[in-house]
Amino acid sequence: MVNIRNGVEITLQTLLKGIPAAQVMSHLFLFQHIKPESSGVVTMAIYQKVDHDQIMLRKTTLEKEIKQVIEDGQERNVFSNPDEGIWFGSVFKNKFHLMKIRNMPATSLTC
Image (tube, rainbow, N blue to C red; front, top):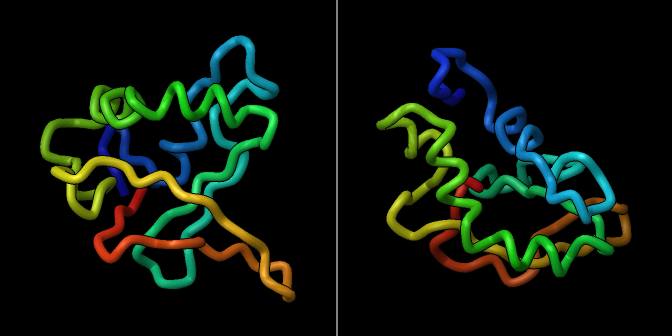
């Protein structure tokens, strides 16, 4: 759970799903699916492939956008290590159609 600046407590999934997309993107919100990875260490935020270029442009400011929404001191409820920032990587579907993280770094983030 994460406390946002208006005093409401929400889940990490709700926080990430509520991030608005740019007008040129295919959906109203940046991410379409938010799913904890089976290790419990990483939360996958999944977006449309057609929006990849826009996501790559936005990733430099995304951490700052999230920190502006959450209350001070709530960073540890969003990021495993707030000093390291957000890790962007790719996912793949295995033969059972489960999404797995490809090349997950040794020090990964919740978001």
